[in-house]
Length: 354
Image (tube, rainbow, N blue to C red; front, side, top):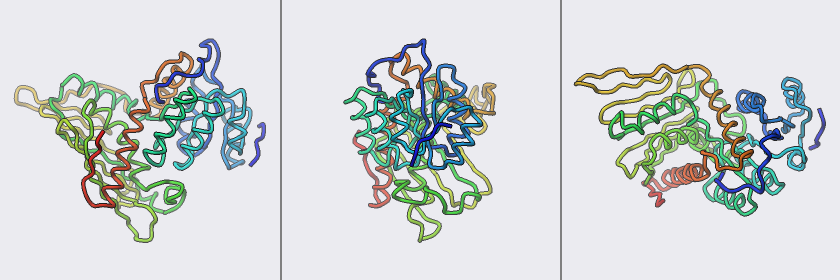
């Protein structure tokens, strides 16, 4: 392939001056990048989006023309060798996250990587250790926790407004238009897993953050396939126990008979409950259930969250500080994912031993 013109909380090798703009390259120009990452990068005044990288030349030409990006590459090695780039955003299929992140860091670049961070915990651990060894910053794209509605629920939990949280359930069921087994999601070597790895990471991002400081201690996982011929699971269910006594259930899939995408997050405490999509918060007061939902915008939540994610990443690089989205959280998600697949294979509850 040719090039053409057209976290870990670790200390960096040297901060970029806050008076300069950060040169950034993006690899992987799929839907997520087009809808959220590219607009967020372009809207940040401290970033210059230097180049895009993808295998599809026609797509690259269109995106560069649309967003005013000066050049593109179809070869990732050319992108990471570009001296005008200080940071690389990775939004490729799962199996490329670890090798691309490590290669980018070894080229002197700091990295923002989409979730899931890697195919498994061992790969994620290797990414973190390499970042520490060569003093580069590696930050996972844990973006759902940055949604305004999720952060609002977190504040209610922190303030003990809902009492002791004992149950949380979350799910992401993709609509019927996604039934067709096409693309890298169904390829084990490229996806690394099925619905739980691909969809569950985003749900665990927000759920674990809202439930903290409670720590997960065990996982029960069940995977299913709508067709026995499918190479990976297209539906998955998990129950995660916490040291606080709380229980989290996770339901994901792209083959259930639902008309459209259905994403939910329901949290229950001893004196109140919180739900998402749309956000609704009720609290028991004087023997009655009272709606105490604050007024927050309900449109563009994910787009705004990606803008905040880019702000956090850029600030950590320009000021040489640790980002709030740490590698420890991404490693925990990877460990839970490994435990899910182990539990499903062995048909038993798996302790995390964290």
